[in-house]
Length: 116
Image (spheres, rainbow, N blue to C red):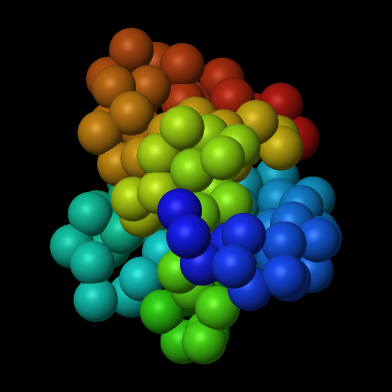
């Protein structure tokens, strides 16, 4: 977790991440080349169904950012994992792709998505 603390930009990173988490009901930090990220996006789109719009979720591709390592370090600090995707629903971390899939299988995901 060195980058976050060595950079001296921890409050800037923290503010960026927290602003993104508050920006939509569903927020995902991803790397577009990651197959688990693609799977998570597909799961969410399928749950929203035909009424899905891009406003329903905010996807942040951190791979394009020079500070992506620091962002992942901060995500680890607040969620316990630095892997992507990191998914937030209603500003609460629900984990990654496998956690999202479990929520879908139990029906809990549909309930969380309706709580807008």
